[in-house]
Image: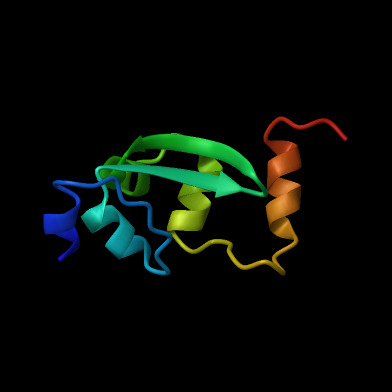
Length: 81
Protein backbone atom coordinates (compact mmCIF):
# COMPACT_ATOMS: atom_id res chain seq x y z
CA UNK A 1 0.00 0.00 0.00
CA UNK A 2 2.77 2.48 0.84
CA UNK A 3 4.52 1.76 -2.44
CA UNK A 4 1.37 2.74 -4.35
CA UNK A 5 0.82 5.84 -2.22
CA UNK A 6 4.39 7.11 -2.56
CA UNK A 7 3.94 7.31 -6.33
CA UNK A 8 1.43 10.14 -5.78
CA UNK A 9 2.32 11.62 -2.38
CA UNK A 10 5.25 12.58 -0.22
CA UNK A 11 5.07 10.36 2.83
CA UNK A 12 6.98 10.92 6.05
CA UNK A 13 7.19 7.95 8.38
CA UNK A 14 9.08 7.25 11.57
CA UNK A 15 9.19 3.46 11.69
CA UNK A 16 10.34 1.43 14.66
CA UNK A 17 12.13 -0.88 12.26
CA UNK A 18 15.35 0.21 10.58
CA UNK A 19 14.81 -2.60 8.06
CA UNK A 20 11.42 -1.19 7.09
CA UNK A 21 12.86 2.29 6.70
CA UNK A 22 15.67 1.00 4.48
CA UNK A 23 13.27 -1.04 2.37
CA UNK A 24 10.57 1.61 1.90
CA UNK A 25 12.36 4.94 1.70
CA UNK A 26 13.61 6.81 -1.33
CA UNK A 27 15.32 9.31 0.98
CA UNK A 28 16.00 9.16 4.70
CA UNK A 29 17.36 11.34 7.47
CA UNK A 30 18.80 10.51 10.86
CA UNK A 31 18.09 13.02 13.62
CA UNK A 32 19.79 13.00 17.00
CA UNK A 33 18.70 15.30 19.82
CA UNK A 34 16.97 17.59 17.32
CA UNK A 35 19.90 17.85 14.89
CA UNK A 36 19.91 16.36 11.40
CA UNK A 37 23.02 14.20 11.48
CA UNK A 38 22.76 12.71 8.02
CA UNK A 39 20.47 12.77 4.98
CA UNK A 40 20.68 10.63 1.87
CA UNK A 41 19.25 7.83 -0.23
CA UNK A 42 17.14 5.57 1.95
CA UNK A 43 18.89 2.24 1.69
CA UNK A 44 22.37 3.79 1.46
CA UNK A 45 21.88 5.76 4.68
CA UNK A 46 21.26 2.56 6.63
CA UNK A 47 23.61 0.21 4.77
CA UNK A 48 26.68 2.44 4.52
CA UNK A 49 26.17 5.61 6.56
CA UNK A 50 28.75 8.37 6.38
CA UNK A 51 28.54 9.35 10.05
CA UNK A 52 29.51 7.05 12.92
CA UNK A 53 26.50 8.14 14.97
CA UNK A 54 24.15 7.03 12.20
CA UNK A 55 26.00 3.73 11.93
CA UNK A 56 25.87 3.21 15.70
CA UNK A 57 22.11 3.78 15.72
CA UNK A 58 21.40 1.67 12.63
CA UNK A 59 23.39 -1.25 14.02
CA UNK A 60 21.79 -1.04 17.46
CA UNK A 61 24.84 0.17 19.37
CA UNK A 62 22.70 2.81 21.03
CA UNK A 63 19.11 3.92 21.10
CA UNK A 64 16.31 4.96 23.38
CA UNK A 65 15.66 8.17 25.24
CA UNK A 66 17.48 7.04 28.38
CA UNK A 67 20.76 6.25 26.63
CA UNK A 68 23.24 8.80 28.03
CA UNK A 69 25.92 7.71 25.55
CA UNK A 70 23.93 9.58 22.88
CA UNK A 71 24.78 12.91 24.48
CA UNK A 72 28.41 11.89 24.96
CA UNK A 73 28.76 10.73 21.33
CA UNK A 74 27.25 13.97 20.07
CA UNK A 75 29.65 16.11 22.07
CA UNK A 76 32.68 14.09 21.01
CA UNK A 77 31.65 14.39 17.36
CA UNK A 78 32.21 18.10 17.21
CA UNK A 79 30.22 20.02 19.78
CA UNK A 80 32.19 21.98 22.33
CA UNK A 81 31.23 21.88 26.01
